[in-house]
Image (tube, rainbow, N blue to C red; front, side, top):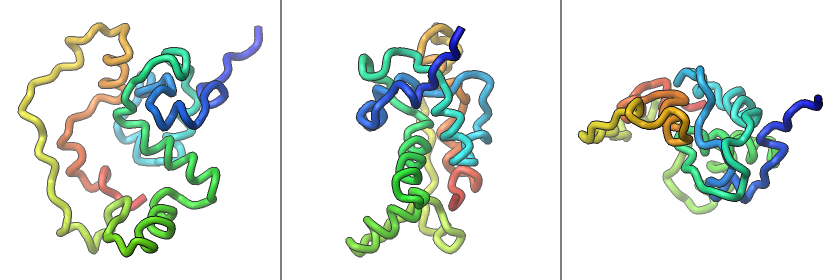
Length: 153
């Protein structure tokens, strides 16, 4: 029996850009900390088998989009997304924009205010892409206020 192809072997860049890649989260078990090494996380994401045939349905990439776009930019340019955006977008436009938070800029960032809506992903059908997306890995909006989340990778 031949091995199953990875998601990255079955998809086109347009699938990634349109959220139709077929993998909108990560398989269990995955920890939030696994996302903080962007290159390793992107490789892990690309190894997943699609949850649906790429290009046939949409599923918002809740925590995976930036990693996958960043890895695509790195493969094409040799630059991390942070450096590519700075060099080719922010600097030419004179824009005050960056990806990743430098220590010197910490005072300029507002905290995310978590929604007051009670949402329990455990209430979802565990066999759905929605459940897998919201729990692979599980997180709350307040995680965006942590130093690890905001790190200049």
